[in-house]
Length: 181
Length: 213
Picture 1 (cartoon, one colour):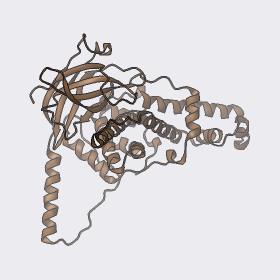
Picture 2 (cartoon, each protein chain N blue to C red; picture 1 turned 90 degrees about the vertical axis):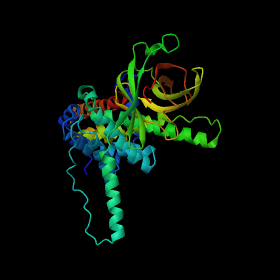
Picture 3 (cartoon, each protein chain N blue to C red; picture 1 turned 180 degrees about the vertical axis):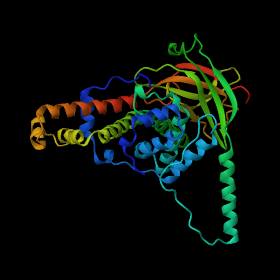
Picture 4 (cartoon, rainbow over the protein chains, first blue to last red; picture 1 turned 90 degrees about the horizontal axis):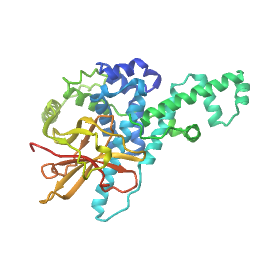
C-alpha cells in the first residue's frame, strides 16, 4: 500500500472533514504508514497496531471536528496519535509502578514522544515538496552546502535557491504547526 | 486544535531538519490486520458516521484447503465469534454531566462544560467525553481524565487516570480492566502540568458522578 503524502490531496482532506464514504480509506492509504511508524517508534508492536487503529477510528468518529483550513490532516492525526501514545506510556508506567509496589519517580516521556512526532512530520513535509525543492533543502540542511554552492551545483539562479528554501521551510512549518495545534 | 504550544521558531525548525536521520525518513507499513480492525470497528458503528469504503489494495484471500471436521468446526466457531463481536453495538451504560465548582476548582474551568459517557463495546469499557467545550491549558500542561472512587464522606478514596483529553479532538479513553466503574463512578477532568508527577495535580476543572450505573 503506498504511503506517499502527495496522495493526500486537499480533496482528501475536505472529503475527510465531510465524512465522505471513501475518505477514511483514502486517509489511511495516505497516512496509515505515518501514524503506525510514530506508534511503532514509541510502543511495542502489538500496542502500536492497537493505537494506530484507535487513532483512525477516533479521528473518523470526530471527522467533522477536523478543519482543513486550520491544518493538515497528517498533523491532526499525529496530534491524536501523540495523546494516545502518551496515554499508553503513562498507563504502562502506572501498572509497572503498581507491580513494583513502590513510589518510583516518573520519567517524563511527553517531550520525547513530541520530538519523535515532530521529526516524522518534518519528513512528511519533505515528501510533500516538489523534487527540486526537496533536493535544495537536503543539500542545505543535510549536506551543509551554502546557497551559492547549491546554485552552482544545480545550475540555478541564487534567488531560486532561496525561494525554494523559503517555500520548503514554510511547508515544514505548516506540517509541524498542524501537529501542535 | 488549540494554542497551547508556543510558535515554532525558525531556529527550532532548522535544528530539527538537521537532526533528521534515516529512521525518520523510512515509513513502516502497518500489517493488513490494522486496517481490518479499523474497518470492522467503523462498520460496527455505521449509521451515525457514514459508511466505510474498503481499501482498493488487493485483499488477502484464503487458499482453498482440505479441512478435517475438527478444524472446520474450530474455524466455524471463530467465524461466529468474530461475527457476533462485530455486530455488537456500543452501548452507553451510564452518563455524567460534568460541572464546575467555583469554590474549589481551577479557574480555567469556569466556562467549561462536558458530558462523559461510560460505553461498553464487547468486554471493553471506555469513557467518551462528548458535548464538550474544554479550555486549552497553559503550555506544558494537559487536560487529564480520571475516575474517582469516593469514600463515605465524599472525599477521594482512590482514583485512576484514564489519559489525556485533547480540547478540540474526539476523546475515547479506555477504563482499565481492574477498575470497576461501579466503584470508581466519579469522572474528573483536571489540568496536569507535564512535571513528571503522575498524581492528580489538585487542579480539577470539571467533575460529576456517572448516573445509571
